[in-house]
Length: 446
Figure 1 (cartoon, helix red, strand yellow):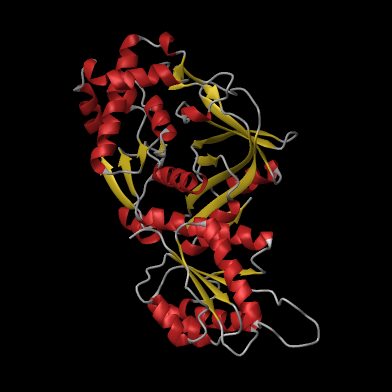
Figure 2 (figure 1 turned 90 degrees about the vertical axis):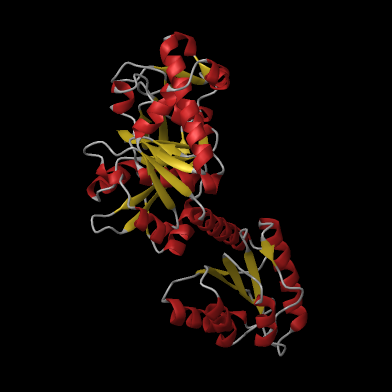
């Protein structure tokens, strides 16, 4: 089944139906402009029987429940007994206040519907918006909730691979398959890093012609890397691509050091860079929750996400620098340098990515975090990626945060957040909040 949004416009025939019909038509038009996955009834649903008939055969991933007029709780209850998907409750503004007839009474209907939803699911277990279909806030909220529901749907169809184990001291990235499935709907499979290393070693130079050509087309400065390391990179890239194609994996976390330096002789960083640029979120240091954060960011933004550590605070500029050894997506590179390659800052072996990331007016710093008690939380901070060159050997991006950067660093350190974050090249804080609400996850705004 494909992703589906069900528009459910309810009411009764004793109110001003001309006003309700106008709102119905404009609302359906708005929803269709926001998603091609919306199912709309041919007419207003003015009885529980009409509602039940419309719902037959639907399999929604999101319900937009709108009170065209007042409707009692039986309408919402009919929905709730059939479906467990997220609900956005939409109240219409009264079209006229002139001392005369109450034309819609949508708000009272919303109270009735909300009371039923809370009785079935508990307080706050739905999204809510008040206003007409022509209002920008309504459009923004609908857009965010639909995007969040689609991301939730995508997670339920995502297979995430853990390639190898986290290094000692990096246990914050480890995940249990049952936890990922129960909370996010994500399937987790595991493969040993040595399996992909051995697969890579089996390829000849002739086998890797396509991978070598792609690297030389995309990377800059590759000619400075020893030919043996270039070939070993291409072999590893082919091994990862082959594994992903065969397994149906849509995101991965990969072990990197020390194995790929000691057992293989060439880092995996540039492989992960290319995979990220191709739309397959890939984290390093075997951080499963980092890969999950990137996958969510990619789904909501449609762009590659930077993955790295917060390494520097500039209080005067209100900015935090995020950095990592060299696996940033090559399509994030600054235009003046392109996807430059170099050597690993500690191991002095290449190829790894070695560039500063391009500027962007709106970015979101995000992390799926796990608290000491095992519960999950979302770290969300918005800002801008500044036009800054590479800050250190490896890849970096400087983010000026909307809120006080010093407070962000102090608070997030004291609250025990993991050291890996995704920097998403879009402002999607609202969408992430709505997704967290749908998943029952704590939201932490910075």
